[in-house]
Each structure stands twice: as structure tokens, then as C-alpha cells.
Image (cartoon, rainbow, N blue to C red; front, side):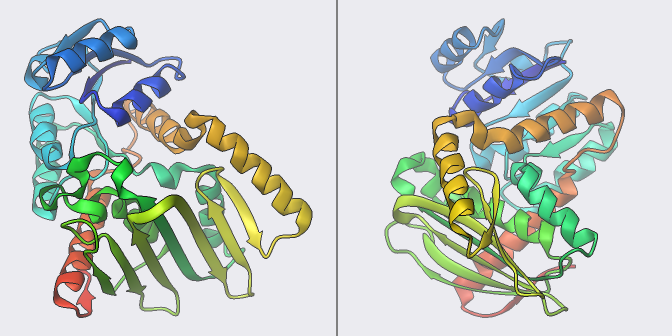
Amino acid sequence: MNIGLIGCGGVATYHAMLYKLIENAKVVAVSDVNPEKARLFARKNDVEKYFQSHLDLLEMKNLDFVDVCTPTSTHAPIALDIIKSGLNVLLEKPLARTSEQCDQIISEAEKHHVKVCVCHNQIFYPSVRKIKLMIDQNKIELVSFKTFDKENGDLLPPWTATASEGGILWETGYHLAYLQLFFLKEIKEILAVGSKVKYPVYDNFCVLLRTPSRCYGTIELSWLAKKMDVFYEVDTSDGRRIQLDRVSDYILDAPPNTAEMALFQAKRMLSRKLTKHYFRGHFHLLKAFMDSLENDLPSPVPPIEGKKTLQLLECIQKSLDEGKVVRVPN
């Protein structure tokens, strides 16, 4: 499959690396608003052609799909250009900046009969899918799903901390939002509390997500940490507390015994040395999307899932701004 890649920043570097691990994938063209950046990226990754404008890239006749790795605010206009060119598109998260833009993408994709896949990579971690299967098969009953993410915002690109790009909520919170939607059958109401401590956007907050059942979810997110700390926790009706470690893609029952903890720590240390290990969710998602194109199957993450995530983010933003409980649209 011939792939066009738009945006030559950090995420694009990892996408290019992963395509090299997929036998039938080849990036044949890249574009970036900075032509020198596009040229260097193309040379480093053995890509044949590079462009300054993504519109020039879309003129190529042999593309099977286009991968968009640009800042959040550019996703919708670039995606619409790709769709109107009749090409399939893979969009790095988030799908767009607003749910209204999501509606445009959904409508145009249906009109032009192209597939759109949103990069909800973390639901493709084997550990995440294993726990979800256990829930779906009634092997465990979910009582709560807790997501915890502490990062140093200074290590991220400066544009991510601006209101126009959505800040921490759209950059990091998007992952936690689609994970909550993946595990919780229906989210009815949310309450968010937080503050703007260091950045012009909410950079330290907590969200409670309520469902019609006794199951609930929580999101705790901060860009004020000096060291990254990320984990997801599943509490079950029989008292199990299962942690999903994102770094090592490892499932850990808490409290663990000594031998299990030693194995966990060893895998975590190894995972930190193998950078590509963190991107195994991306790897499985990319392969699933390519399979959907080859066999005319539904997109593994259709744009409607991106819209649902955006709606949840917009409700969280509203709750933070107004300090009250907000109902989530059906």
C-alpha cells in the first residue's frame, strides 16, 4: 500500500518507523508547511517525494491512503481536502477541534465513499483488549474504571498548551476520554473540577463520569509533574483491582506478590529502552486499518467514535468552566 504522510513532526517519525515494520506498507510521499523539514524527513526515511503543500501531495495518483500527523486545529480542514480528493484517511487524534467539524468529516466521507480511521491507538493495546474481552464475556463485572496521567507539560510541543489547540484536554485527555467510552457502556453525566496553574489552559483537573448503572469512571490528569506517571485501573465486583500499565502493556493485579512485581518492574524497564514498544497500539491500529482497506471492511475506528470522544471533551470543558454537572449527549 502506498501511503502519503502529512506533517513531519515527532508523531510522524513514529508512524514512519511503524510502516517499515509492516510488510505491505510504504510511505511514498510526505508534506510539511516547512519544506526543509519535509526534505530532511523524506531523506531520513527513504521517501521518494516531498512537498510543502498537502494539496500537491494529494495530486499523486497512486496513493491508497493518507496519514495526517499535524496539529489539532488543522485536522478537519486537511481531512476534508483528502476526502474530497477521494482518498481514504487515517487521522492522528483528535479527529477534529469541535464536534461540528466531526459532523462535516462524517458527512463528506459518506458522500465520497471513503474510509476514515481515527488514531484511538490505546484501545489496541493487547492488555486493554484482554480486559475488555473479560468484561464482555462476563468473566469480570466492572465497577469502576480509573485513568491517571501525570506528565511534564514542558516536554511537549508549545502549541499543545494553547486554547486554540484545546490544551491538555484535547492533547492528552482525548486518550483517557475514548478509553472511558471503550469500557463504560454509557456515560450520562460528568463533573469536572480543576485549575489553570502553570499554563493558560486547564492543566490540573479531575473528572467523575456517571453511568445509569453502578459503574463509574474517573479521569485524573495533570501537566505539572516532574516525572511521567500513567496507569489505568479496573475495579471489579468481586474485589479485584487490576492495573493496566501503559508503558509495558502489562496487566497487574494489586496488590501483587513479590514475584509478579519483580516481573512487572523488569518488563517496564525493558519497555522504556525499547521506544517502539510504546507504539504497539499504533502498530495494531495501522494494520487493522490497512486490513479494512484491503478487504473492504468497516474502519476499525470510524469517525463517529471520534465525534463521541469530542462531545465528551466538550462536556468536560463546559463543566470545568461552569463548575457544575453536565449531561452528555446521547
